[in-house]
Length: 55
Image (tube, rainbow, N blue to C red; front, side, top):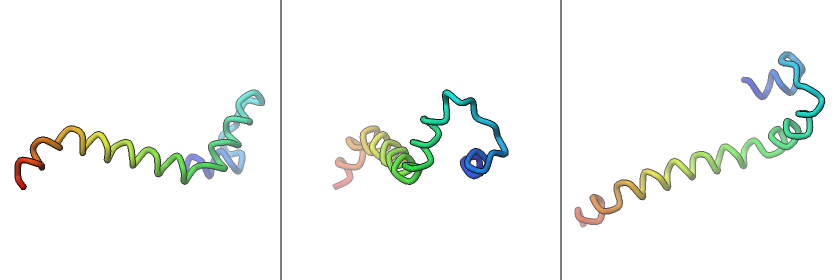
């Protein structure tokens, strides 16, 4: 919802931050996928010894 508001001008963005906003808006699904991937890797790293002992 926040990206929608930023895209449509509901939340104002300073001129110097518009380039960064444009980059985030163009790659939002890539950033979301990277975030979920990072969380999954942290979980796997934390519990790898436990899961491998179950097998």
